[in-house]
Image (cartoon, rainbow, N blue to C red; front, side, top):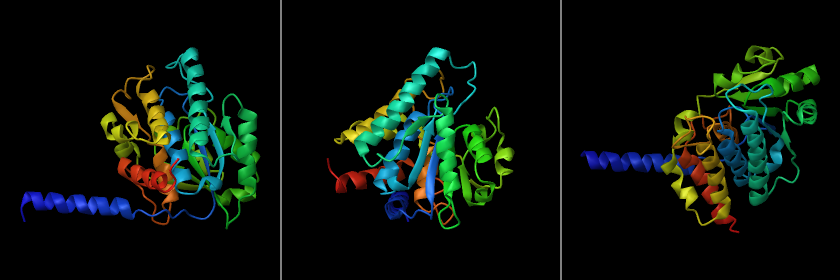
Length: 282
């Protein structure tokens, strides 16, 4: 078999795998706790993609909590002025994506640092109604402190119905009030998947399809990731389009611990979003 034939077969197999990826969420609800106000701006693209994926999968009603800017004690690597901008940009990402894609009228997008009490209460409410048949999956897309405070204030008997999804130790032990082991000590289930940066922090050109998309819903998602690329607080996002934390949402909506996609890619995201837009034109 010549080299060209092998490449064609490999491409067909890859395309088939992407196309065949099914929406198959586990039982229960989902909550997302993101940062975005820490030096790394990747949650701008991550949040836009996460919300678009939930809507495209028809699972927006399963989202019961979304908070951002969960870095409660910000490092000196970001100035007060730049952090203030990030709060505004994260709120715009949440509200703008939700308005354009629709389906999120039941959700308040909380600023975890500026609305800390309300954020914790909202997550506590979701924890306290969890059951074996209706567990809560918490996506740790930032520091674990808000999750820790909510677990501390919630019913202990419900903690066995809480599953916390994580993909990177940089978040796990970045808390100022809770370390990862302290989160686990509450009796929650750890759901750890591989580093999502591998396939979801990519060269900008891999998102040109979104930049040039005829549907402004997709253009807006691209724009949020572009805001992170042009951010001048850190250098490591230059030339990149990063929605790595959205990989945890992709994992959940494709099955989670029951065969969920543990290493999602831009092609998986593209397939799900474009399929939805084709079936639901503006």
